[in-house]
Image 1 (cartoon, rainbow, N blue to C red):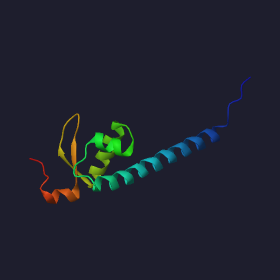
Image 2 (image 1 turned 45 degrees about the horizontal axis):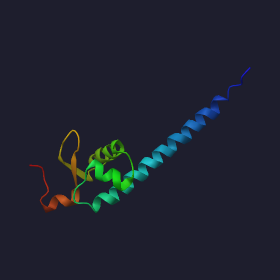
Image 3 (image 1 turned 135 degrees about the horizontal axis):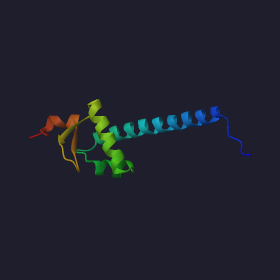
Image 4 (image 1 turned 180 degrees about the vertical axis):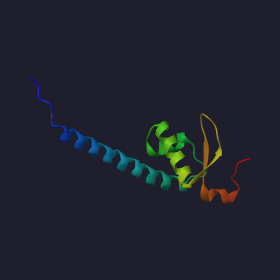
Length: 96
C-alpha cells in the first residue's frame, strides 16, 4: 500500500517553484534592460547570446520590454524582429 504525500506539501512546493520562476524572469528583465542601453539595435539572437538564454525567451523578453516602453519595434519580421532602445530613437533610427 503506497502512501500519498500530504496535499499541503505539494501546494507549498508548487508555490516555491512559481516564486523562483518569477524571480528569475524579473532578474532577466533587469539584465536585459541594462544590456539594451549599450546596444544600437537589438534582435532576439543578439539578446539571447548576451543573456545566454534561448531565442524564444529572448523574444518574450523583448516583447515585455516593448510593453514597458524601453524598446521600440523598428522592423517587424516574423523570424527576426528588429528593436531599438528608446534613447536611440533620437539619433534617427525610426520605422520607414
